[in-house]
Length: 241
Ligand SMILES: Cc1ncc(C[n+]2csc(CCOP(=O)(O)OP(=O)(O)O)c2C)c(N)n1
Ligand code: SF4
Ligand SMILES: [Mg+2]
Image (cartoon, rainbow, N blue to C red; front, side, top):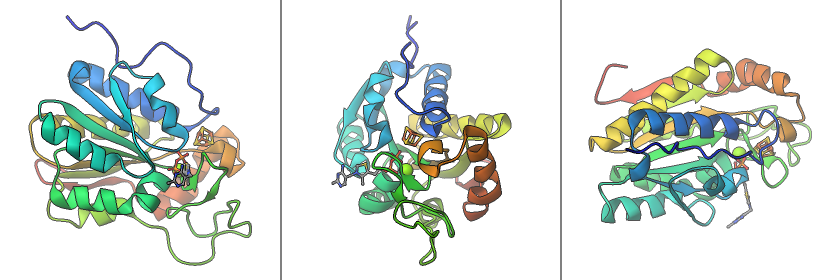
């Protein structure tokens, strides 16, 4: 009997209030509750979650910046009985890896993508990302973002014919966190039953690079970020929304 938990009993390197902590826990709980730990293979990003392989009791592959969907495609195709997910930040997925994510979704690969959107390049010091919202101060938009528009990747993915489940959760209040976990579980279940491409975005705090306290960060997600990126289920081809 598989008694090992998906999350290792070790400390995270993440800053206080970082959304990656919450997302790691939700992912691990989902895997444990579905009883699929021994089948899971994860693909880690370049970004603050680059050390994700230190925290989980399953196999994790580390690949170059933005390339997790390409690696996940290859692994899932040669090992279709495994449950394969990517874990990617907004710099990784929405900037350098935009091509990989759009094409893997358009091909309808039977993988699960977890997209942690903290509206900045956390690891490299808080530069503007494609998901930086209007007016947001970053190290490269010191007066606040005042041109272009934030990329809504979930909406782009949901506009394609092939994905089966696309949802955007919010990692702030307990009820929203629970909802995000439900999305993750549903996405993994769809993959296990061979339904196809699933994509979960999570609006996540980066208190360090936002220069906010943990509670200020959670409030800002509600007051500003959730307005730019409306949460909820964007697409569910298999079930009830
Ligand atoms: C090919 C390549 N280009 C640029 C970098 C520098 N780099 C490392 S992490 C990162 C951005 C990380 O931001 P994000 O993916 O949003 O992750 P976060 O740290 O915010 O979780 C960049 C640009 C790199 N490592 N490799
Ligand atoms: S810099 Fe931001 S994303 Fe990186 S660990 Fe700290 S809070 Fe998390
Ligand atoms: Mg980021």
